[in-house]
Image (cartoon, rainbow, N blue to C red):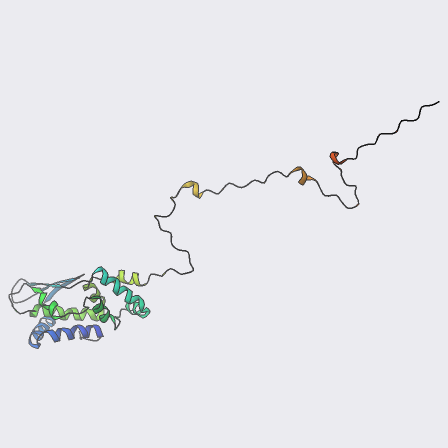
Length: 239
């Protein structure tokens, strides 16, 4: 497998070459090419591996990586959201060029450094740090990075699926309704789901029942408004 076809895998190998002398790197490459790395397990912040050496029992390798703090994680997500192209690149399986600087700003390095290499442990009797068994594992990790750059994020405690979900969440619209806080919402009840009773119209008043008079017809007169009959004068007495 060729090393360094992507910028992040080239960067990984370059750091190894800068921190370790060429002779030990050559011995580590020999172990990696001969298939003496029996297994590799990658977890957030930790790589464990077994490498077959001169002894019957394979040597155990433990590579511990500094993981991001909660504050550093929030800063990284904030910087990612500032650049819309970052999400598209991550979804396409690529690492943005600026990601190394973002991690540096957060206080957690994305790639290896000399201090990290000194903390790596191997059960072999070799006093060199790192030994050829550790170098073989690091070189094979560089190969894995070719196809899966998210290994870098996993080593720093960031999960691929969770990261993408957080980056692809839709922000609430300014003109849309605000979400209701569950603590402030009214408790649900069956009565709240029932339809409100229909309002009944009041019976029409006596006045409203009266039909308007048709043109040309005598106007109805209520008894209270009827003219009172006038009394006739008595006839004069006969003489």
